[in-house]
Length: 132
Image (cartoon, rainbow, N blue to C red; front, side):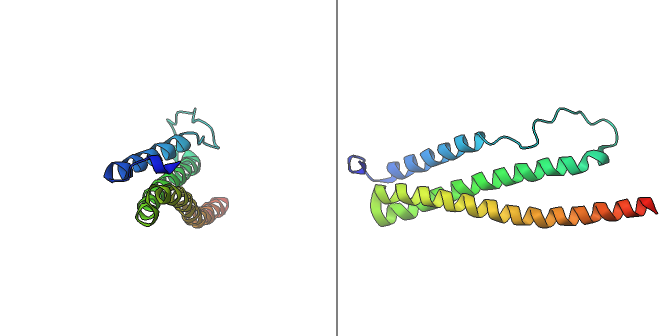
């Protein structure tokens, strides 16, 4: 199947572009688990800060996962091309994209868990101060 494609710089660029487009299309299908924001915040924005932070965290996780997949796919494609030509590039790009996306997701998730625990502790402390 891959034998009819010519190898060269144009093939590398085409592969990188194809991987980037596939990742962008896949990321576009990710919808927010919190739904679309419908409330316009005019007063007391601090009350809505936890929800705003949840949305920012979700957006950052999606962005980092997509970027990790793109970078991993391009790096895997280049390494695969050097080792096995076009067929190696395709395999390397697919594996690199999966590995990059998974690693980015897990790293971002762990960072956000720690951040969320710190925020919850701060909210709890603030609630206890208000009750005294």
